[in-house]
Amino acid sequence: MYYPKSAIVENLYTSGGEFQLLKSSEEFIGFYHKFNNGKFFTGKTNNVSPRYELVPYIKEGSESRDQLAILDTKDRIALFLGDPDPVVNQEEWDQGMVMQYLKIKQLPTNDDNPRDTPQFYYPNPTKEDYEKTYFIRYFANKINVKNEFIEIDKETYEKLKDQDKKWSWEKYAVFKVVWTIVAETEEKVSTINRNMLYLKQRDLRQNGLIALLRGNYSKFFKSIAQLKLENAPKQVQEKSLKDPIPNTKPIPPSISSLRSEKYFKNKKFLQEKRAEFENEKFKRKSSLDQNQILSNQKSNQQVGLEQEALKEGSVDSLPTSSPPNQQTSRNTGGY
View 1 (cartoon, rainbow, N blue to C red):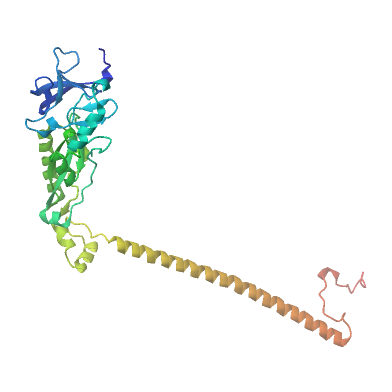
View 2: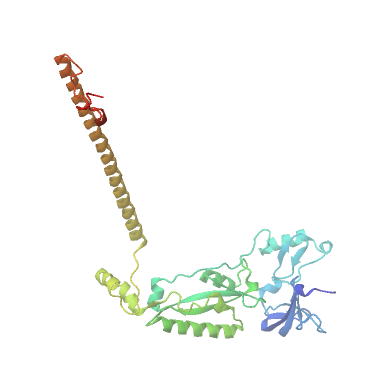
C-alpha cells in the first residue's frame, strides 16, 4: 500500500524500554518509523524489508497486560492500555459486553471516565526552599515524540510515576531536576543549573529541555546577601535603596503599600484639581460681581445727576459731551 511522506515519520531510534515486537513480545532496540494512524514498524523507512510491527513495551508481571480500555465505543477498542491498533470489526465484538466488563473491573473508559493528561505548571519557590538553597522541578516528555517537554507539579509527577489508572501514564516519561536558587553570585547559580540540564539532556538523549526553559539558568535566583537583606531590620532595607549592597536588589514595596500610595496620590491629585477649579470659579464670580458693582455705581451716578437737573428745572443743563469737531469757531461765528 502506498503512503505519502506526510503520513510517515522516519529515521526514529529507541534505546529500549519503549517498544516490543507484536508477535514475540520481545523488547526492541534500534531504528523504527511510525504512521499517522498510530502504528509503529521496525526499520528506518517504510521500504525496509523485512519489517515487523511494534507495540508499546510492557514489563513482565505488569497489570497493564490484563487491563482493557475503550477508546471509542462505536468501532474502536483497546486490548490493553496504549494499544497502537485499536480498530476492530464491530461485528466481531460485542461492545456492550466489553463495556460491562470494564465497569465490573472498574477500569477507565473514555466515555464514562476520561483519563487525565499532564498540564503546564509554573513553579514558585517557597521561603523554605530558599533556606535549603534549592528546590525540585518536575518534568514530563511524551514518549515517541522527540524534544517535547512540559513542566508539571509534584502531584502529577507522582501520579504518572505510580501508573495511576486515571492518568494516561503510558504516554509519558517523567523525571525531576534539582534547581539551585541561592549562591554568592548569579553567575555561579547559572553555571550549576546549566551543567545540570546538559547532563539530564544527555541521559534523555534529547535536546528540548533547555529550549523549554529558554536558557534562563538563573531563574528564581537570590544571593546570600539578598536573603540577609530581606531578613534585616527596616532601617537597613531603607538604607539599601540609597546605597545598594553588592549582589543584592532593593527590597520591592509590597502590593498593599503600592496600592495605598497610588490611592493617596490619586486622592491628592483630585483634591488639588478640585481646589484649582474652585479658585477659578471664585475668580470668575468675583470679576462678574465687580463689573456689576461698577455698572450699578455708574447707573446710580447718572440717576442722581438727572434728579438734580429736574430739581433745577432744566434737563438741558445736564453736562453733555460734544464731539471735538462740533465746537463753534470764534472767527466764523459758528459757520
